[in-house]
Length: 283
Ligand SMILES: C[S@@+](CC[C@H](N)C(=O)[O-])C[C@H]1O[C@@H](n2cnc3c(N)ncnc32)[C@H](O)[C@@H]1O
Image (cartoon, rainbow, N blue to C red; front, side):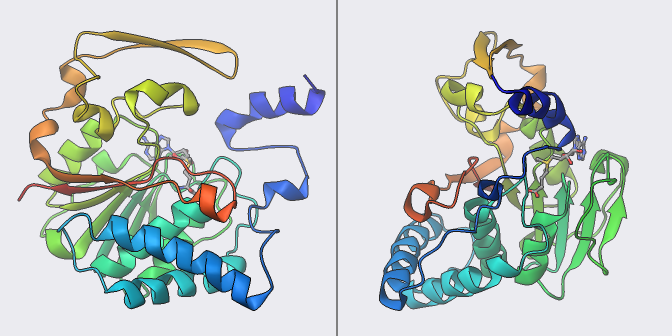
């Protein structure tokens, strides 16, 4: 293993890297021949329209309307302020964030897990007039600071939210914390529309360096059984997790719908996708 890779492995938990390869920018390769670029966007439009309409949780535009949103995102992404978002969301995760936020049109957005601010920027592009509250236990790595957002360098559980209109609010969790706990906390605070990143299914826990266990997908998966212990290897290091009832925070009963979005990165070839998932909570 190269020295660069060893150093990056040590830096990964801090969200840092030493590599300067152009490949770290997930949008430095793209189609420029117009009719072929169009074909790619239509493929993405097909998949995203199908997934968004698979759940009756928020209004979704018709096929042409979703295409217009997909096209808008393709135009927007090259202007993002965080070109190299190592350990953070790339093109495909950001696309789902943008589409769901455009459909829901929330007046209140809460984000937990900000890091450099890439996802804050995407959500701001989708919701220009919304009130934003951004939580991260370490805000020292911010590249994009939204001028109208409230930043809190603490876990969001330290902050009460009152009078939340569930239909017009969106919670986005990319903080690698227990997702069942986040469901419980969000429901208690009145949120009903949630987006999660890193919702790894139980048989793919190995694919996330810091899986937010239990993930929301595990809560609904018959393969994930309370009382069991799971073992895996991630980047050469062995891990284990013992799944307890206490870890579920009674969150199963709070989930009305869950849509694990399809991985569009195999269509766009713009890098990685990390299990973006929409959750509608019960009223
Ligand atoms: C993967 S990064 C977020 C990336 C960002 N959403 C993006 O895609 O650009 C995870 C972040 O969660 C933060 N974090 C860890 N524990 C947290 C907690 N308890 N509350 C809020 N943020 C936390 C870390 O400091 C880190 O910045």
